[in-house]
Image 1 (cartoon, helix red, strand yellow):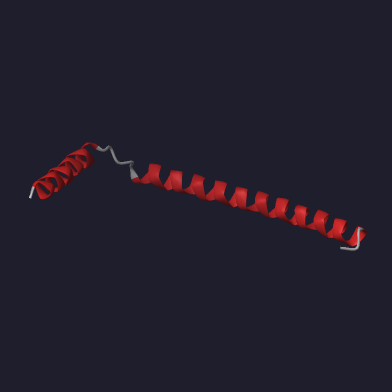
Image 2: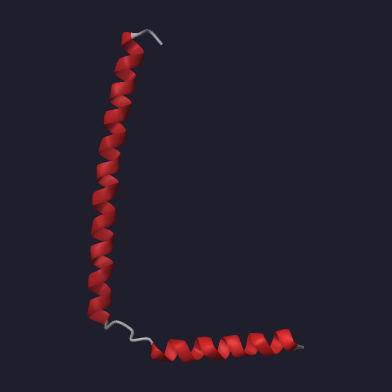
Length: 67
């Protein structure tokens, strides 16, 4: 029975803490999402180029040494 009381108290405290949160405005949220999406795109392109370059180097090495 004590575990149930602790669980109820925990969720009451969670609700209280959520009421203290200052949520971002819509334009701040959209701006942050756009920045994140842009950075994900940049890193995806970067990793794609690095992957392509590594594959090309490995292909060259395998052909040069007949592996």
